[in-house]
Structures are given as structure tokens and as C-alpha cells.
Amino acid sequence: MDILACPVSDCRSELDLEVFTSHDLESEGENIEEIDEALITCPKCGRWYPVIDGIACMLPDNLRMDGKQRIEETAFLERWKERISSEIIENGIPFSLKS
Ligand SMILES: [Zn+2]
Image 1: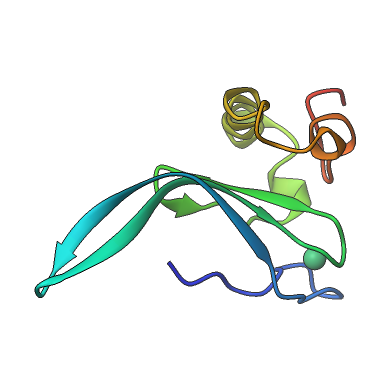
Image 2: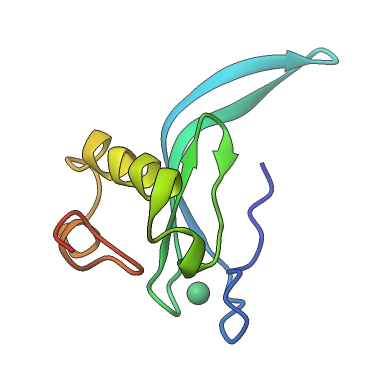
């Protein structure tokens, strides 16, 4: 999976990736690792983005704050809260489990 730059227009930083689950896929005789669930973090603006079912959800803040997206991303935080830093769980940007 190609990790793009942070989508925030005044940030565009390179991103960090922590993989939680993945599976091997054979493609043209080569084993490649396909990510299922992972956490993407931006070291510059402090935002976090989830990878859910192999899809990096890198949406602008306003599309994450409510509705189905908020529910899915909150469930992601709940699912991996033992492995995600308390900073993100408690004070994550744009939201956390406590906000
Ligand atoms: Zn950023």
C-alpha cells in the first residue's frame, strides 16, 4: 500500500504507519504483505488516520466528525486501543475516544 502525504492542505507531511494485522498475498510468484488494519499518524499536524479492511481512510476532518465515518473510526480506536498511544486515545486529532 502506498502511503500518501498528509491530506491536510497546509501540512502535506510524510506519514508514519503502524501495522496491526496483515496477510500474505502471492502475486506473480512473489509474496507481498497486504495490510488489513493499521494506524497512520502524521508527525507534523498530529492527526491520525485508520486503515480499515485494507483501505486507508484519509478524509478531511469535517467528513470524519459524524455519521457513519465517525462510528467506524471510533470502533477502530476501540478495537486497537491497547496498541494505540494514550495520546491519540485521549487527545487524538480530529477526535478521540474521550471527545
Ligand atoms: Zn499532517
